[in-house]
Length: 171
Image 1 (cartoon, helix red, strand yellow):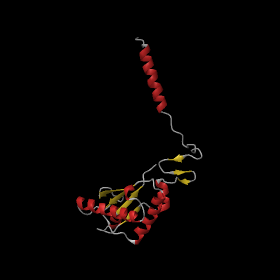
Image 2: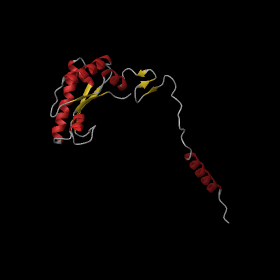
Image 3: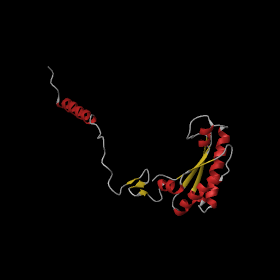
Image 4: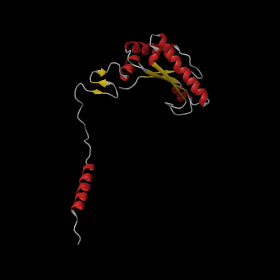
Protein backbone atom coordinates (compact mmCIF):
# COMPACT_ATOMS: atom_id res chain seq x y z
CA UNK A 1 0.00 0.00 0.00
CA UNK A 2 1.27 3.43 -0.93
CA UNK A 3 1.53 6.12 1.78
CA UNK A 4 0.46 9.67 1.19
CA UNK A 5 3.07 12.39 1.17
CA UNK A 6 2.70 15.38 3.51
CA UNK A 7 1.97 17.62 0.48
CA UNK A 8 -0.82 15.29 -0.64
CA UNK A 9 -2.31 15.25 2.86
CA UNK A 10 -2.25 19.07 2.94
CA UNK A 11 -3.94 19.24 -0.46
CA UNK A 12 -6.71 16.82 0.53
CA UNK A 13 -7.21 18.65 3.86
CA UNK A 14 -7.40 22.06 2.17
CA UNK A 15 -9.89 20.74 -0.39
CA UNK A 16 -12.09 19.24 2.31
CA UNK A 17 -11.98 22.46 4.30
CA UNK A 18 -12.90 24.55 1.25
CA UNK A 19 -15.81 22.28 0.36
CA UNK A 20 -17.15 22.30 3.90
CA UNK A 21 -17.10 26.10 3.94
CA UNK A 22 -19.18 26.20 0.76
CA UNK A 23 -21.87 23.98 2.20
CA UNK A 24 -23.04 26.43 4.84
CA UNK A 25 -26.39 28.05 4.25
CA UNK A 26 -26.91 31.76 4.61
CA UNK A 27 -29.09 32.80 7.55
CA UNK A 28 -32.76 33.18 6.68
CA UNK A 29 -33.12 36.52 8.45
CA UNK A 30 -30.47 39.19 8.47
CA UNK A 31 -30.18 41.65 11.34
CA UNK A 32 -31.42 45.18 10.67
CA UNK A 33 -28.85 47.78 9.59
CA UNK A 34 -27.43 50.03 12.30
CA UNK A 35 -29.53 53.08 13.12
CA UNK A 36 -28.57 56.15 11.09
CA UNK A 37 -26.87 54.23 8.27
CA UNK A 38 -27.60 55.05 4.67
CA UNK A 39 -28.38 52.77 1.74
CA UNK A 40 -26.19 54.52 -0.84
CA UNK A 41 -27.91 52.87 -3.79
CA UNK A 42 -31.39 54.09 -2.95
CA UNK A 43 -30.57 57.38 -1.24
CA UNK A 44 -32.73 56.47 1.75
CA UNK A 45 -31.74 56.42 5.39
CA UNK A 46 -33.85 55.77 8.46
CA UNK A 47 -35.43 59.24 8.25
CA UNK A 48 -36.30 59.28 4.51
CA UNK A 49 -34.56 60.28 1.31
CA UNK A 50 -31.12 61.84 1.66
CA UNK A 51 -31.25 65.46 0.42
CA UNK A 52 -29.78 65.78 -3.07
CA UNK A 53 -30.17 62.07 -3.85
CA UNK A 54 -32.06 60.43 -6.71
CA UNK A 55 -34.67 59.23 -4.20
CA UNK A 56 -35.11 62.80 -2.93
CA UNK A 57 -35.55 64.00 -6.53
CA UNK A 58 -38.31 61.44 -7.18
CA UNK A 59 -39.98 62.20 -3.84
CA UNK A 60 -39.97 65.97 -4.42
CA UNK A 61 -40.64 66.09 -8.17
CA UNK A 62 -43.13 63.23 -8.26
CA UNK A 63 -41.52 61.51 -11.25
CA UNK A 64 -38.47 61.61 -13.45
CA UNK A 65 -40.42 60.88 -16.65
CA UNK A 66 -42.63 62.87 -19.00
CA UNK A 67 -44.55 61.36 -21.92
CA UNK A 68 -45.19 62.49 -25.48
CA UNK A 69 -47.77 61.98 -28.18
CA UNK A 70 -46.85 60.08 -31.35
CA UNK A 71 -44.27 61.88 -33.53
CA UNK A 72 -44.24 64.83 -31.11
CA UNK A 73 -41.83 66.58 -28.79
CA UNK A 74 -44.35 69.20 -27.60
CA UNK A 75 -44.89 69.55 -23.86
CA UNK A 76 -48.47 69.35 -22.64
CA UNK A 77 -49.69 70.99 -19.39
CA UNK A 78 -49.06 67.80 -17.39
CA UNK A 79 -45.46 67.64 -18.67
CA UNK A 80 -44.89 71.30 -17.80
CA UNK A 81 -46.24 70.81 -14.26
CA UNK A 82 -43.91 67.87 -13.70
CA UNK A 83 -40.94 69.75 -15.19
CA UNK A 84 -41.76 72.73 -12.94
CA UNK A 85 -41.42 70.43 -9.90
CA UNK A 86 -38.16 69.03 -11.30
CA UNK A 87 -36.86 72.56 -11.89
CA UNK A 88 -37.65 73.57 -8.28
CA UNK A 89 -35.65 70.58 -7.01
CA UNK A 90 -32.75 71.21 -9.40
CA UNK A 91 -32.56 74.92 -8.46
CA UNK A 92 -32.56 73.91 -4.77
CA UNK A 93 -29.75 71.38 -5.43
CA UNK A 94 -27.28 73.32 -7.60
CA UNK A 95 -24.48 70.76 -7.25
CA UNK A 96 -26.42 68.00 -8.98
CA UNK A 97 -25.86 67.35 -12.69
CA UNK A 98 -28.48 65.42 -14.67
CA UNK A 99 -28.78 63.60 -17.96
CA UNK A 100 -32.01 63.93 -19.89
CA UNK A 101 -32.72 60.86 -21.98
CA UNK A 102 -35.00 60.95 -25.01
CA UNK A 103 -36.85 57.77 -25.99
CA UNK A 104 -39.26 56.67 -28.72
CA UNK A 105 -41.55 53.75 -29.44
CA UNK A 106 -40.51 51.00 -31.84
CA UNK A 107 -42.15 52.46 -34.91
CA UNK A 108 -40.07 54.44 -37.40
CA UNK A 109 -36.52 54.06 -38.58
CA UNK A 110 -33.57 54.07 -36.21
CA UNK A 111 -32.37 57.43 -37.56
CA UNK A 112 -35.82 59.04 -37.28
CA UNK A 113 -36.24 57.83 -33.69
CA UNK A 114 -32.76 58.97 -32.63
CA UNK A 115 -33.53 62.46 -33.96
CA UNK A 116 -36.99 62.51 -32.34
CA UNK A 117 -35.56 61.28 -29.01
CA UNK A 118 -33.02 64.09 -29.09
CA UNK A 119 -35.76 66.66 -29.75
CA UNK A 120 -37.75 65.27 -26.81
CA UNK A 121 -34.77 65.45 -24.46
CA UNK A 122 -33.91 68.97 -25.65
CA UNK A 123 -37.52 70.04 -25.20
CA UNK A 124 -37.33 69.02 -21.52
CA UNK A 125 -33.85 70.56 -21.12
CA UNK A 126 -34.91 73.89 -22.66
CA UNK A 127 -37.98 74.04 -20.43
CA UNK A 128 -35.88 73.37 -17.31
CA UNK A 129 -33.34 76.00 -18.40
CA UNK A 130 -36.15 78.52 -18.86
CA UNK A 131 -37.14 77.79 -15.25
CA UNK A 132 -33.69 78.70 -13.91
CA UNK A 133 -31.72 75.44 -14.15
CA UNK A 134 -28.20 76.07 -15.49
CA UNK A 135 -28.04 74.43 -18.93
CA UNK A 136 -24.42 73.45 -18.24
CA UNK A 137 -25.65 71.03 -15.57
CA UNK A 138 -27.81 69.12 -18.04
CA UNK A 139 -26.62 66.62 -20.64
CA UNK A 140 -28.91 65.31 -23.38
CA UNK A 141 -28.79 61.85 -24.93
CA UNK A 142 -31.16 60.09 -27.31
CA UNK A 143 -31.70 56.37 -27.22
CA UNK A 144 -34.37 56.41 -29.92
CA UNK A 145 -36.18 53.10 -29.74
CA UNK A 146 -33.22 51.17 -28.28
CA UNK A 147 -34.26 51.16 -24.60
CA UNK A 148 -37.99 50.49 -24.28
CA UNK A 149 -39.51 50.26 -20.80
CA UNK A 150 -42.54 48.39 -22.12
CA UNK A 151 -42.26 45.49 -24.52
CA UNK A 152 -45.01 44.90 -27.03
CA UNK A 153 -46.35 46.21 -30.28
CA UNK A 154 -49.51 47.90 -29.05
CA UNK A 155 -50.74 51.37 -28.15
CA UNK A 156 -50.16 50.91 -24.42
CA UNK A 157 -46.50 49.88 -24.82
CA UNK A 158 -45.85 52.61 -27.39
CA UNK A 159 -47.30 55.30 -25.06
CA UNK A 160 -44.97 54.21 -22.23
CA UNK A 161 -41.92 54.29 -24.50
CA UNK A 162 -42.46 57.83 -25.90
CA UNK A 163 -40.75 59.67 -23.07
CA UNK A 164 -38.00 61.89 -21.71
CA UNK A 165 -36.35 60.86 -18.43
CA UNK A 166 -34.40 63.21 -16.16
CA UNK A 167 -31.71 61.00 -14.64
CA UNK A 168 -30.16 62.05 -11.34
CA UNK A 169 -27.03 59.97 -10.60
CA UNK A 170 -27.32 57.43 -7.80
CA UNK A 171 -25.21 58.20 -4.80
